[in-house]
Amino acid sequence: MKILLVDGTVLGRKTGAILEQVQKYIAQFDSSLELEILTFSDYQHEIVDGRPFEQYNEGLQEMVKKIESADGYIFATPIFQGSIPGVLKNAFDFLHPKALRYKPVSIVANGGTYQHHLVVENQLKPILDYFRCLVTPNYVYTHSSHFDADNNITDQNVQERLQELARVFVKYCEMSKILPKETIDQH
Image 1 (cartoon, helix red, strand yellow):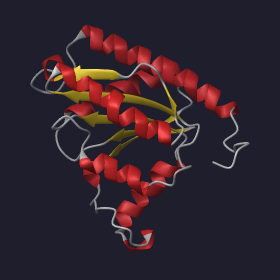
Image 2 (cartoon, rainbow, N blue to C red):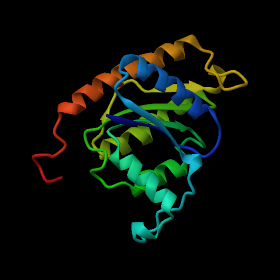
Image 3 (cartoon, one colour):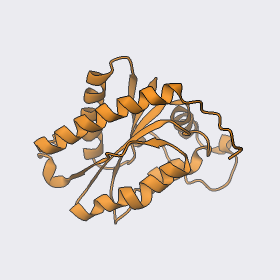
């Protein structure tokens, strides 16, 4: 299975640091999974504006195709102004409605206040539900106090929660392998 660890921002380093740690934990639980970190800052983003997909830049087309062809995801996002970054929402807007169907997804997020964890519940999970993803129940939210000056995660509890997220995600990957992606209904 091809798993994308998506760093859903073009700013900062904390989401990437979280993904690197999750990548290590997933590999410990299942070394057969093909893991790749996809970093939004590596691409030139354009706003979805209704034009044909082929008219967007090649890098963005490549990124969207890479997301759609993966078998599972860890989505990482900072929380800015009480919301996910526009670049992450914009990326979701490019995806075909059935592209993520019944694929395993876990969420990690970080923010400057402890209350911003609700953004995961109120914004990101509904988007993933729309895509009918298999969203694991245990997302991990980090606060800037959980990192040192070099963006290393210093909080032991956060490390344990990331490890548990990886363990559950691997189990969702196993379930996804045997779940048909075609539906009985036409939706």
